Amino acid sequence: MEKNLALVLLLAPLFGFLANIFFGKKAGKGFVGLLGTLSILISFFATTYFFTLIQSNGKAIQIDLFQWISLEKFNVNFSFLLDQLSVLWLLFVTGIGTLIHMYSISYMHDDENVHKFFAYLNLFVFFMITLVMGSNLLVMFIGWEGVGLCSYLLIGFWYKNEEYNDAAKKAFIMNRIGDLGLLIGIFILAYVFGSLEYSQIAAGIFEKGLGTQHSALIAVAALCLFIGATGKSAQIPLYTWLPDAMAGPTPVSALIHAATMVTAGIFLVTRLNFVFDLAPSVQLLIAVIGAGTAVLAAAIGLVQNDIKKVLAYSTVSQLGLMFLALGLGAYQVAVFHVITHAFFKACLFLGSGSVIHALHGEQDMRNMGGLKKAMPITFWTMMISTLAISGIFPFAGFWSKDEILMTAFHGNTVLWVVGSIASIMTAFYMFRLMYLTFFGVFRGTEEQKHHLHESPTLITIPLVILAILAAVGGAINLPGSTWLNHYMAPLFHKAHGEHHLDNTAYMLMGIATVGALIGIFIAYSKYIKKQEVPVQDSEIKGIASVMYNKFYVDEAYEALIVNPIYKLSHFFRKYTEAAISEFLFGLGKVTNGIGNQGKLIQNGSIGVYLLAFVLGLSSILVYIFLV
Image (cartoon, rainbow, N blue to C red; front, side):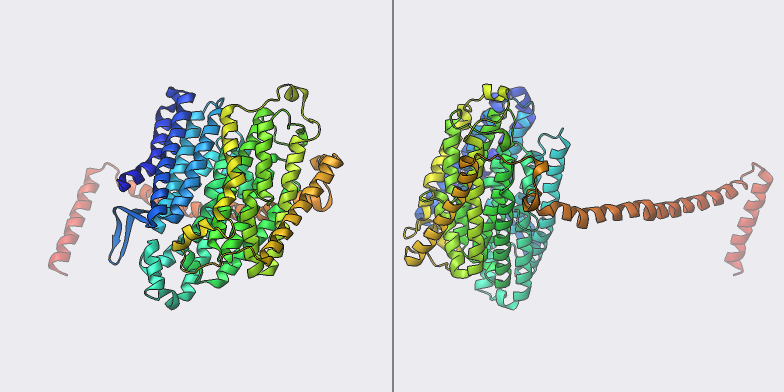
């Protein structure tokens, strides 16, 4: 039964993809939305069953389908693993995925290719489930590449816009850079352990002592795996694709950039925690990169005016905090923030989509304002999620972010300071978003003002559910009652100390709360009390201009990497390829000339042919009998 149910969990989204891609256009928009949503809902129900089963007995479920590769001592099975980590990930992937599909029924209703949209969403969830359920690195890699492909299809869904196509290509290419590192890491682990099964790698480390024998190789493997994670989870230096990926429809932003694809890097590091524990220098690098990404992305988010771009840089920043926790060895703390972030960030993205839907495509916050009365459900759900991401007590983000900062404080004070600064920035730019969008006077057109209204029920229901989860989701891991830590304990051989409510904890909570309130107060002072509105792009000056232009990182990549490659390819095309072509054409001309000379012998004279025959035959006889 368990094997069959696991296959249902995996294949239900694939069935939704196949049905919608082949028959969706004829079936109608209502049918494709319903089918797409139900296929993910089925997976969610199956996941819930496995969650309760594992919660009750604590035993992982291994499902072997068939032997995939057999090469002497190296074998790879096509198999799946349902344990505490994979089931936890599947819960919010399928649960939030269901809500996003429901939301999309209304949001994408007027799109002529809605059947393709739901097909791509279903395919994306199928590959994400494959990534999470795989019992070895090779099956995981299928899902890893699959979500990369689907992100390309979804980001560039409105392919008639060339900028959106460029954004899709950028995401695809930058992920391939990270994937090269991932592949090298996989090859090294296969060489060292003779297997790609997670259980076999762990056994090689803890039972056979291979970790000590090959410590240098394992450190290199950990570094390469982290490079792969930086691509998927948008960390320095491979983070620039994610803000551009806002080109896709808003449900895509919520699905990919809140709860699924961008968390794949955190999943990978957590799954292979026993490998990273053997490489403390790589762990320190992960923590530093995470903290740096958190503060860099937060600084850029301070001055963005596109509502989705603010949320995009917020996602990059929050992912940085998760990697900060991973680098300090607090894997369950990172997972805790993954879960709470999935709740409030999905709500914020869907809420921004509700605003964009009401304003007929407007995304610039300078042209919004005063939407609180016209869109009360959208406002309150986004406000709850904003309080959560800002780390305000008692919302979900307060508990998970506080855990990360406490871990940093006890592990590395400098990283704690950097993380705290990023958190203060988060509170400022998120309330800046809320104040500019929902407070003050409406700054859009009269036509937009006339048509202002709350979004349809299929859009607001997911918002309400996610807002409730953003409010109470922190209860899964409250200090002193750490259900999540105990639930995930079997996954970790190196225990991470739990944080109890002592004087230090209260002090750190107080500092974090005061910092968040300072950020909120500054935003209130600027955008409510003084009623400031961000200036037009051409008027942005000084350091604000540098931050608004994303510290010119894209321009630096263009100058240092892209343009030199273009020039090199142009050189090869103009000179090297031309030289090779001339050489090959020259060989052809020589051959053609020799052939033309040979044709002269074929003059139609029988006497000449007989002479040639006699001479040839005589030569053969002389060679046979006299030589």
